[in-house]
Image (cartoon, rainbow, N blue to C red; front, side, top):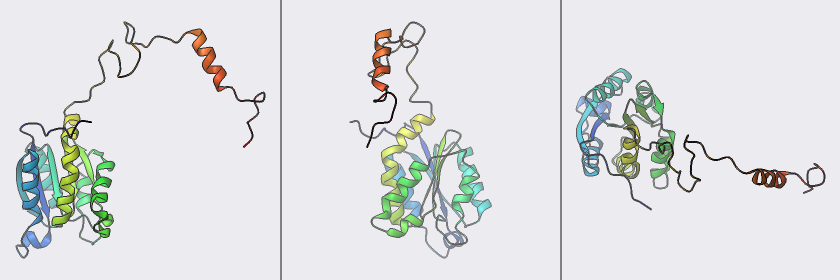
Amino acid sequence: MTGPAQVPTGARASVVTVSDRASAGTYADRSGPLLVAGLAELGFVVDGPVVVPDERDRIVAALRAALSAGADLVVTTGGTGLAPRDVTPEATAEVVERDVPGLAEALRAAGRDKVPTAMLSRGRAGVAGRALVVNLPGSTGGVRDGLGVLGAVVGHALDQLRGGDHPPAAGASPAGGRPRTGHGQEPAPSESGVAAGVAGLRPADNGKDPGP
């Protein structure tokens, strides 16, 4: 089994910290710098953290600015819970075009065994153009768990967004499959093969369902 795909050379990431207190200067942002360092270790050229308050329009503006600047990956930290001002997922929904629900669920599951309240995170993951946008919790533990999940899949995700995983060209044999004809079509099965297949699908007892 091959390991995780490497982050493409020169790939850019941007970090956005969402916190009223950090934005006001009454609380030191710890999760943002930790996220920057972790993404750099994965191989990204990282911008940020940009710190914004828990205000939907400010979060949307920060996300769009990062995407306009050419980020391949935008990761937020904070504002994913149930508090009235936790609106990062709603802001993210305004920016992404397609959700990646499996990634969001994996991020929640990563911390659930250690911190049961991780399941209350409403963080999203989605695609905006050719970039990936991901919400992480505002805690340093949530960021560490999230980096572990991202490290396993983000290289492959960016490869897909850049057009990787193309289907085989016409005339090529699919893995483990039959050779194709000159027009890219699989050869039709023989009449004897069709007959054998149909016979194997006929129910027993003259069409009556077999008993339990």
